[in-house]
Length: 234
Image (cartoon, rainbow, N blue to C red; front, side):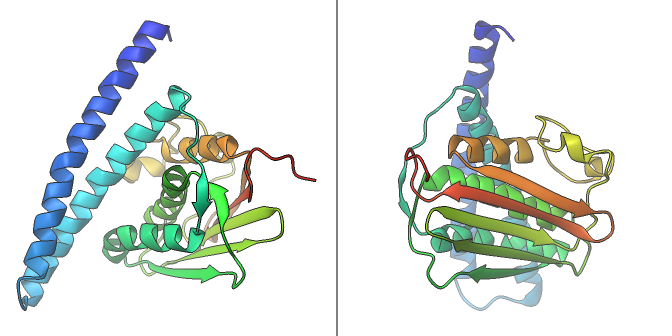
């Protein structure tokens, strides 16, 4: 891809993503106002839940497009001391409408001595959101997702595990490729960019992402990050 074509693509992606986020934010605000306006009937709450589910889909899509553009433009990290508890809890809350729609339960577990880690909180949020979102979407009705975060002196460990469909062995070498979607995955809404973004963001943080999967049993993704960026680990 020539530099001119890439620049045009990045500009178009940023424009579309930003244009999507503004109306989505407004819709989300009106939904919250409606929920807080007084007692709702069961049917009214169901309608609002469907609206929240749809706006979250649009928000996830805009975030994916923006992050893909940032990666291709080699945007550097904006590091800060971050509490991963808050990041994970926030992303799980945003994905609750999707989980309810899919009838999937999410369990969170944090090490008691987790402390702070030096990461780009916005971009690591995108990586975590993509992993949890996939664990929900590629799950079964009544399935479960576990998100576990722990740390040792030098490393931060994030694990997202599901008991869903699993990834076919023939697809596993390609799941981090940009735009790759398995034949089964084409039945699920998505862009084929989610795991590519996870891998690239983890690499930017000098970390590693691995996975194991068995068809009919589920999939586990493990992200390992240095707790302090830019410092050689001994």
